[in-house]
Image 1: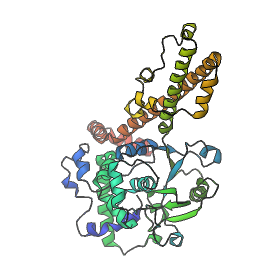
Image 2 (image 1 turned 135 degrees about the vertical axis):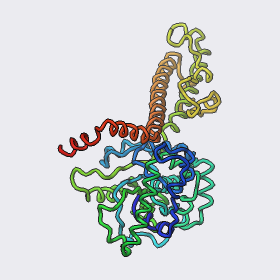
Image 3 (image 1 turned 90 degrees about the horizontal axis):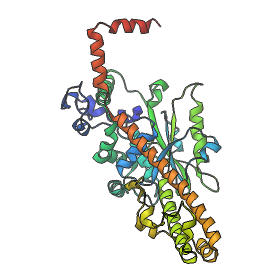
Image 4 (image 1 turned 180 degrees about the horizontal axis):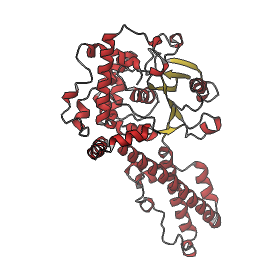
Length: 427
């Protein structure tokens, strides 16, 4: 989003060859919604808002599993402690300005995956990749796994170019592009190329703060240290060594200092966190709970075969793995009879089950049923959140431009546009 990556690609545009493609190459009229073909042949990247739902959908469609994006509403310690753990990284959106280059490493350290942003507006995808490619033992999905392996020995700049040419990432990113995004992106590049011909070269330090674009950067803990990964900086910046403290304590002052530069009332920043997907703990927890329930019920059957007759709530429940699977869970939950059967019961619970009498087992079973209900409620909440993310992403991807154009055209035909403009101007 910031101008620096844009300037890197102005050379071709200034020679009449726009790397984003000419507007007349789009196969459908400018007034029509962007088609899948429009998005696929476009070489640019669209801007994406700092919205957790959009980033969650991007991660899912990239094939990344076990990671979820949450919005960080405050950097107060109490609020940060509410985030699911572990926190894999932070994404910070702000009006970009260059930091002190002397703070950067001389080269990208071994074991740290860092890519530059070499394409305009690709910072959302670059920030995401700069985090997920540094999470140990994560399921990246086959396309990103191969990409990480392919770029392992690349420099940050070459990795940035590889992202810009990686059709898989570009397709997912640009699924959020609307026709106006494509047209504005190409027009902006053309205007920048024209302006470059008409004025002398201006260095980044000469740019006014108001001209700076919004930009995503990442903060990650890697190798016992905390790193600031800004795709517009040549190399990563080490923020400190992690000892017993929370790694977020190293990133927090940097973010707060940048936020303090805004005037009171200005909210021109956003913070997102990448955390472990709670479903990846909830599903095994439910499987273990149901496994213990089945063992408890089997032991009660041996000690008192008629125990179910005294409890109308459990008289029709067998607590078998097949019965435990509820239709409320979709395929993503991965709760199957086999998963329940393979769940491991802690040794301490096994010993308790052997020594407890019937009354104790009945009490323990009731506790397990209460816990089961709580876990199922949490799972439903997470699944509803995923469904809500999909709905928000679908709404963002829908191109309302043609509807707005038709509405304005109707107003113009009824000679209502000018009165509305006058009314707005006179307010």
